[in-house]
Length: 138
Image 1 (cartoon, rainbow, N blue to C red):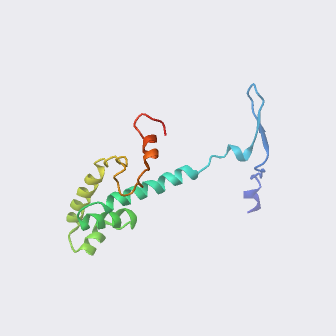
Image 2 (cartoon, rainbow, N blue to C red; image 1 turned 90 degrees about the horizontal axis):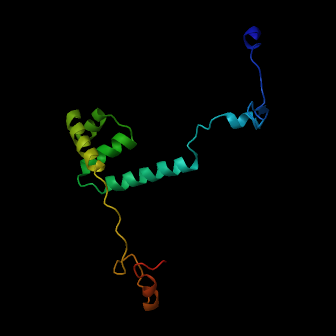
Image 3 (cartoon, rainbow, N blue to C red; image 1 turned 45 degrees about the vertical axis):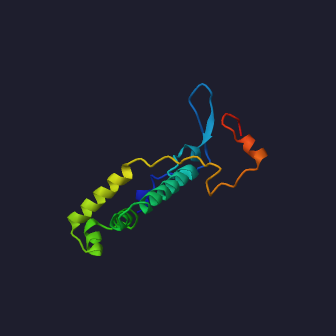
């Protein structure tokens, strides 16, 4: 066994490597290893995408479509398992799934801007309203 590992060399990750270019730069070995993680931006985008999908799914009409999407994509059920839960055939689950995915592919309506008459926006005082005229920077 010792003969099998004798050819293995150990190297420190903080060892500096020198470049062969014109600049003669040196870089630590650890800085040359690619990062396999998504990083904070990738994690945020994934989380945001799941939230947007959940909102779109919750806005769908038929309860069976919601259930199929949740069980298939979030709980990782097979179509046959979903069929057992719903009491329908696997082919019917496939039809429901296809219809739900087609509905999700339709672009969502863009959010409309709030107006002073919207219940979620506090009314402006007359002096404040002048600051929100179109064309005036906020």
